[in-house]
Length: 106
Image 1 (cartoon, rainbow, N blue to C red):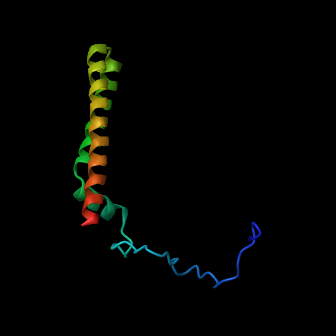
Image 2: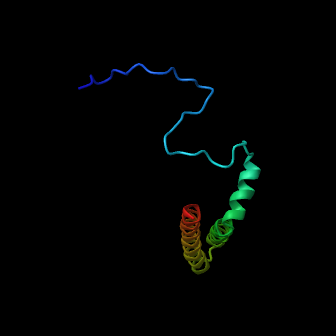
Image 3: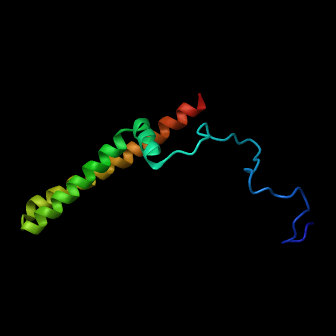
């Protein structure tokens, strides 16, 4: 039985090279991409997520504006709309994950 905390001597670790993991193949995106490029790629892969995010932000903003103006009934409606938009966004994320998992299997 091996002593806990003791490492077996092996090949030295080279920090300039990525580790080799059995059964793992690196991503097809070998070059580093900027934030803008990644955002555009992710938006093209699943365009419903940014739409849901914008809908959530719009409902929240308008609901807070109505609350500030004293329109409590309209504010409550917009907060419920915000919840629906958040649900839409979460569903879009989950469906996008499922679609990409199915795509990677085939």
